[in-house]
Amino acid sequence: GTSEISERAPPIRPLEEKPILSRVIAARMSSKASMPVKRALLIIDVQNDFCPPSGSLKVKDGTDVIPHINKLKKEYKWDLVCASQDWHPSDHCSFVSNNKGAEPFTEITMKSGSKQMMWPVHCVQGSKGAKIHEDLQLNSNDIIVKKGTHQRVDSYSAFFDNDKKTKTELNEVLQKHGITDVYVAGLAFDFCVGFSALDAKSIGYETTVVTDATRPVAEESAASMRKELEEAGIRQISTKDVFAELSK
Picture 1 (cartoon, helix red, strand yellow):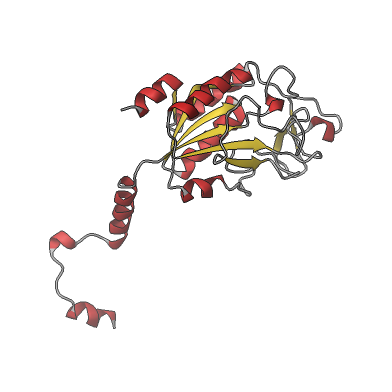
Picture 2 (cartoon, one colour):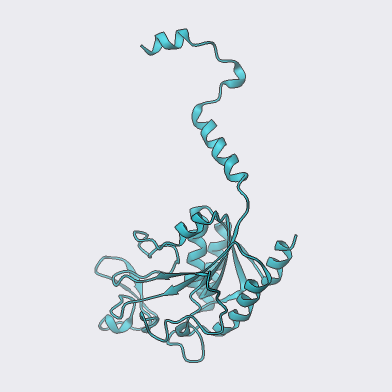
């Protein structure tokens, strides 16, 4: 029996009286701490439909983020660059035209019981509006992650659909490349950029939002998102500060 085994076992010296679970946790923490820092730039939804002058869901000054993102790409050697792309079927649940009597930019309750913001038709799969803006300089080895592909659920985050039941391949891609830190930029700050940053942090990545490389849909929701990011321990710094930090 177990008592017999314990009687035969040599006495444990006091220094070794560390429960096995805490030893495992300590080993995991030290292995994470000893992991080399690898940084990814996440470019969220810089697509024609989110950009002025003619995007169906254009973000005010949305194209102003592009020079900042191009500069981030050009002047630092990222371990990985990923760009997300909103990619909706034409019958998507978030389109106001698919919900009789709904008004754009108001929230309705879906049959599933979940709340859904009503948006103008945008980023329909294969459309010009869904294309990544031509001024954004992407390389052939940058990875494109499509999101919002399911008809019944919206997807603000580049990691998960809003119901958290379906995920994109983004986390697997980051893990495969050994990424530890992510820097998030793109459109729009108060929705897809913010929710992508919150998910990145919750998964375990050191997360930074590059403030001048993103723009919000509305100031009220932007203020709310800034607070949420702060409370989650996500840094919000400018391109200039990113370069100052990465050049050390």
